[in-house]
Image (cartoon, rainbow, N blue to C red; front, side, top):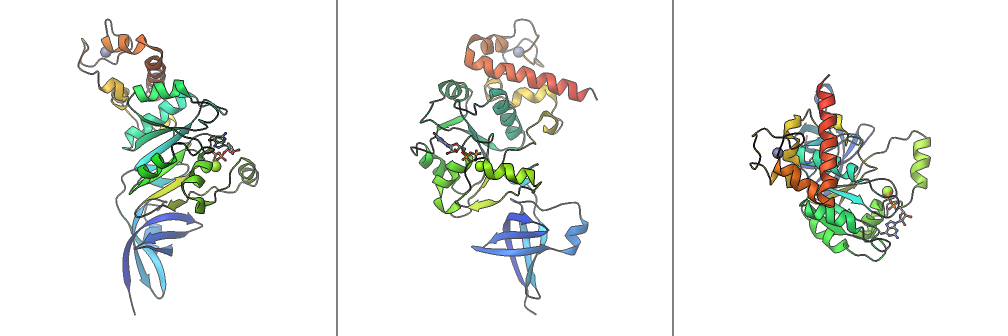
Length: 293
Ligand SMILES: Nc1nc2c(ncn2[C@@H]2O[C@H](COP(=O)(O)OP(=O)(O)O)[C@@H](O)[C@H]2O)c(=O)[nH]1
Ligand SMILES: [Mg+2]
Ligand SMILES: [Zn+2]
């Protein structure tokens, strides 16, 4: 009996069958009986050990995860591309701010893509997020603006695209690699929902050790998913607040109601920072309510 061992990454899992990318091959794998009993359910992005016995491949072990997101479940995300726009469907800044906090908690780099730049340059969003310290890229799936920048960022990483429906995630990915051939537009998705079809995430291979997933957006970007974040630590997940720490009268200052807080003053000084500050206060409030239970 010949036995083969490989380490690979799950790019897709449907109905108990997994596609594992290993040494340049796509292996169709089932789960080892032992793993079925265990608590860890493998998800796309998981690094796994696979074993060939009696002619078929099995996942024998799930390696330790860097992080995991839910609905859709994905693991080991290095970077999250949040697609936003001032053009319809206009993106709410609070949504971006919540996603940025969760990405930070999960140790995921967030990149903001301002799509539909052919229609609207999204100047306000550009200013708010570049000043807050994020990598912001203007993109157009029509003119191709920004596509090369995205391509170079994808190299060697596991990435996910998120953003509201209709914002252009699939269109951008199709420009990155025309071979993806992802359906563009909302119609197919609405039909899927009507049929209660589960929407599966699939990582698309894009060069060596690089994978990108188109997602319908994560429902995990909710306050309750902030891994029971201590509200005093929320400021650590706002880069511009983190930069200002140590300037306040109270060492445990949260920069909300404390008198003479220079951070509060700084954040209220200009409309860009204020937008972020309002989200900070809103998330802080929500975390306070969650922790009361
Ligand atoms: N003008 C313009 N339209 C775009 C752009 N990107 C996507 N669209 C259009 O927006 C709609 C939704 O795009 P899609 O990629 O399906 O969005 P998704 O739901 O985020 O995957 C489609 O009609 C696209 O043709 C863009 O950069 N500029
Ligand atoms: Mg899409
Ligand atoms: Zn303060």
